[in-house]
Length: 361
Ligand code: MRU
Image 1 (cartoon, rainbow, N blue to C red):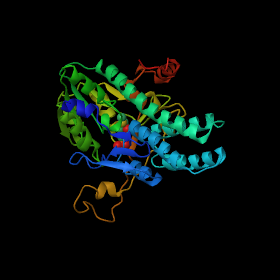
Image 2: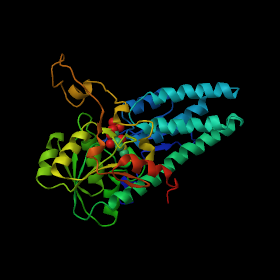
Image 3: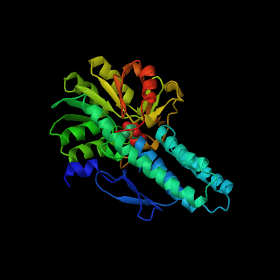
Image 4: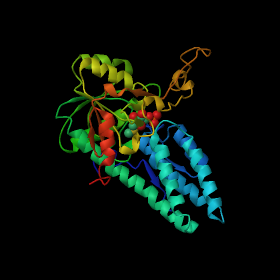
């Protein structure tokens, strides 16, 4: 297997052979250590999501699907009602691990739908169907990522400079990724790009994960600090920005890793197209605008202490640590999904997307 293939097809989340455990790559250990973790309990799963051992909107959804399946197998219940009550308890617990990426609740709701639609069946049959559903969520994500990557590739040409933030590659999804997918696909087809990845403070997903994935795949990547986006744009090195997303509102406002909206504002200033990439499972029509998207606030220690030997600010200094921000739809050139690229006005183009045939070819 080539190193490109090893990255695009990385086994970041899977069910154990007996189907009773979830196995993930611990993304907090990368790039220096590749370590697999076995998750067995509700707390293992909750902590893995909260602590970003598994992260990236689609990856969280896939993990939650497998997770609720293994937990459902642990339920001891004589009746459907008892089974469902315990299942809903696990579901709510996992769902409370992180609030912003809609793929988490989307996957859990899909799994719950299997339970409620089959209440006449035996618990054994329901468990079988839950197993099928979580595998389907994963399989569909693989197809979605490939389709998104194809659409994204149509936006760039050989030699282009591309800016990306955070990590929207295979580790954050299933295969190829979303915003990074076109770069891997292009590489497979002999194209070369010059990618600028920012570090993505405070948790450094860009430095630890994006530059790792691209470098290993043999793609030209330059790592910059978050405050260097403006200079690389001004230098004329960036043709286009490719970003992932965690939740897209009905009007096209898009929540993504903190710092994304700043990059979008800079891109607008320099006249650089700014594309957001995500599967339709990341679009939340219940959110009319970005105002409705809940933004996760994380431990302030991540700013002051996490990557430092000693705290780099006084103990008494306050920190504000939102994990995401919302990019206004006016700053977005297009939203790249598995069903096509939505252009402004987004309210109409997003609506049209959902009227399309849901099969992916
Ligand atoms: O906090 P994280 O690392 O889970 O945030 C992830 C992002 O913001 C990604 O850009 C997004 O989930 C897209 S993943 C294809």
